[in-house]
Length: 98
Image (cartoon, rainbow, N blue to C red; front, side, top):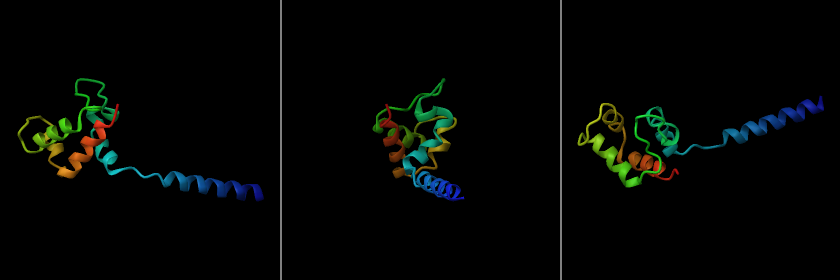
């Protein structure tokens, strides 16, 4: 009985540690990009890869899509939902990836 109690306490402590992991806002915002641009921005197909691109390039591109200065069938709709700060978070995140 004592072993079961110790094991149960150990499992709860382990779960507590796993639940304590915090995902940054930049990672959360960037997750939606994975559907088209691939995991971590490494596109497996015809959609351009965005990992490792400069923060300035990504930020400028997203602003142009959002503001209607650059045409795309999907990106304009995605970018229109982001604030300037969120665009910068996304740009900084993908530029930090190898």
